[in-house]
Amino acid sequence: MQERKAPASSSNQAFRALADETRRTILRLLRDGPLTSGEIADRFESSWPTISRHLAVLKEAALVVTERHGQEIRYELNASVFQDLIQHLIEWTRPSGGFSRRISKAARVRQQEA
Image 1 (cartoon, rainbow, N blue to C red):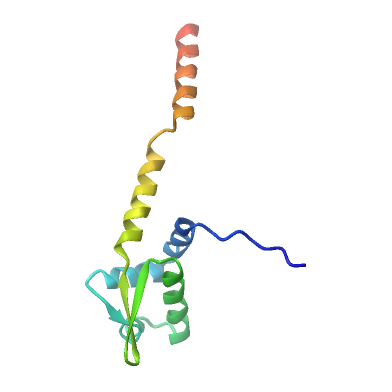
Image 2 (tube, one colour):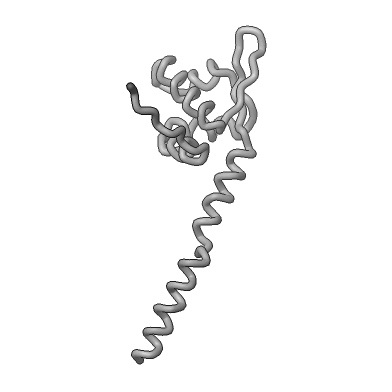
């Protein structure tokens, strides 16, 4: 019997996708508007299958959305996912209730020792 892995959270998938420089470059290209997979591939020296795989990773992470127009597939940034990631990062900068209480206790101990 095979062991099943729990699916990665969407933010984990997005951070993994963003870890690759080629995928970040693709996202920068899409800032100016949708592009076809061919238009994206033309900007890289990598092979078509390599770029296609990068696009699939970005799509799986929901960082891009696709729309088919005849034979072409157009890729576009999914801005809502980026907003969610930014919110996630901002939350990391805020101490949790338990963490701030531990800091306060440590500060009181230092004050008492002084």
